[in-house]
Length: 288
Image 1: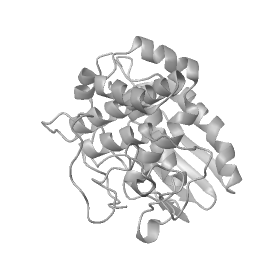
Image 2: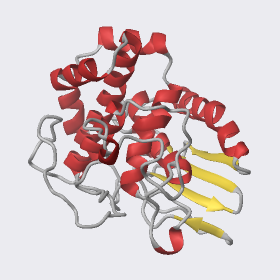
Image 3: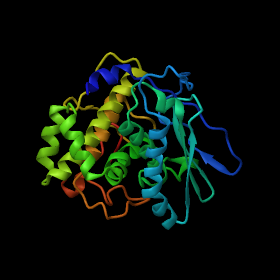
Image 4: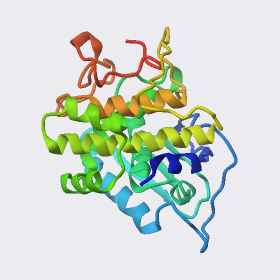
């Protein structure tokens, strides 16, 4: 797979869902607003099929509906395959944890199963990704950078079977820097394979954002964003920053059995105060 080529094909959009009484909808979707629309067509090339669309969301439901039930909630995924919107979003309606996934996103030529899963995991992360939360009225939701981090820190690790990861690594053109870092951090082959597969999904995401934003600079794992924020940002991070965050989530060697905290971002994660170097949230959006 030529992941750079896939990245340059990418473009993405956001369309907010209709407001439902007594619901709390995030002001932003997975990416910034634009008017991209991909309807169902017999001439579709690339993207994933409706069967794959449902398989990904079935997998997410199987693993995380019980997690949300234990929190007193109900996971509900709106599977809007017929909707041409290239987007995803999250909202909370009482005890119902809603995720909206659109067929337009699934049909985009750059969308793969793993990238689609990363998007779904990001939206789930708004619900259960823990601190840092959006400031103000949206205090039920993990912020954008936090949801990116959760997607690769926890969610994708949960849903990717070991045997599939092994096959993926054998049959995929992998980023050399990713390979080196995963091999240096993780002690077992299974963990290294998982890290590489998750990392590749994050790379695809970085190229996706680059195309969406029509940026001339190609994001790379070995050229991380050097900006350091003075306070944690709730907004969508820059392209390189988002790729960095996915990568760091994949590199975090931690005890995944420790429940994430709604108020303390150091619990159950990799953080500098505990001596971690790899796997920490990117400073380009997060202030420890």
